[in-house]
Length: 259
Ligand code: NAP
Image (cartoon, rainbow, N blue to C red; front, top):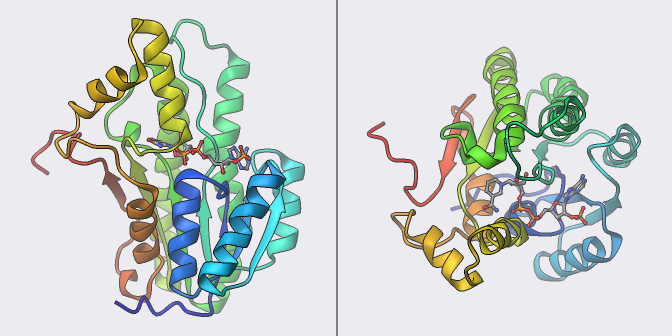
């Protein structure tokens, strides 16, 4: 399928690895020029070079912490106005509800709620003025079904989801869509880190921790960044203009519900 977005420009945040990289690869395959961000310059440059070589699009790599005000300003200044915005950042650490301090919550809200909101506030006016835009926020399956040890994530992402629900309906008439992609377990460094916590807590092997988790997923496997990226590219495509303010779960059927 021709996604109809060849020649558009996208800003993909936190995109040197994992789900963000999956989105960047899929957009590049559709002919989209990229501004790609992550903190670590080495992995970022390597990913940018690989995408340029594979897809022949331009990739501008900006090494910065997207959750800091200075990092965000640097990325936004380099990106200018883009047609497609993919917001993403690392997830908060796991822990226990009784241990989190006000500072822990502020850090999580900054990273996973206020950063994507600030990026949208920066890019939406230009998209609306041009009459076309796409925003895809990478959130989490924890928005639909809470994960106890990820209470910081549950809280921050619920706040972002509320903002998107209202804002998406305020900008849709101007040709701009905002949607959230909710990953369940995908095979990335983040999943490995979370499985590492289970290994430690239960005194089992990594293989056993993965098998235990796969058994909770009807598809009986982890998702891949490529599958995730394909969903992102579709939401960014010309074909997805009537999909507004949705929360799309990519979890191999793990969330058990009729609708
Ligand atoms: P990942 O494999 O750890 O990759 C994270 C990417 O984000 C890397 O490129 C990393 O590069 C970059 N990054 C992290 N913090 C950043 C920051 N402050 N500023 C700029 N770049 C940053 O993670 P992932 O699995 O793709 O997860 C992406 C998001 O989805 C996270 O918020 C995660 O919580 C959420 N999620 C993931 C899963 C899953 O199963 N994988 C499930 C539910 C939710 P640098 O470290 O060099 O900055």
